[in-house]
Length: 237
Image (cartoon, rainbow, N blue to C red; front, side, top):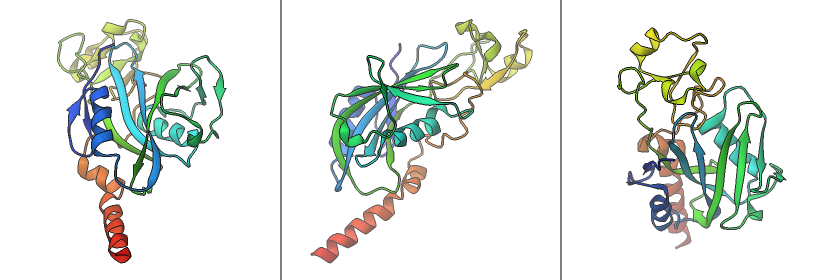
């Protein structure tokens, strides 16, 4: 598995996930009074060695179903498949379980779709705080989109041929080569920044979490949150 760099969504710093964890803990998880857990979600994509990862925090008062919804939106949702959480030993964990029940270092596995299953490993890293958020889960950092090469011409690939799904290194094509590709079961899907890429009917329509600081600030109403905090401090003083 090839580790992939990612970007901090709040300041643009780029690093591997371990260094990114240290960065966000030091820089972006110290202000506010809403208790949270910082967690790392990791997955491996079909037919590639690429490591997909997301660092995010979740309000402690929420349940695992909140993380279920977040993972579906950013990485997984295609056809409304069933999903479940499991422990490392395979025991089922109910989605109603509260985030307050976990401890730093706890690890769960999330399975989406019990046919062509995508598995995500979730590690709860640390207890943190943040300014009060409208959204229960706040993304802090994410891996960069891996550059996958077209198997025919070597240019950057844009599609996965699902008919070649068992051939791994021969399943990725650029626009032109996809048109020329002759496969008995030819069926293409777009390449996405997700471990679900190439599975079932996944196209990433719900994934709005690309690296765009202005858009993320607006999505999380960050400027409004800061203004409300400053107004409260001024009133209290």
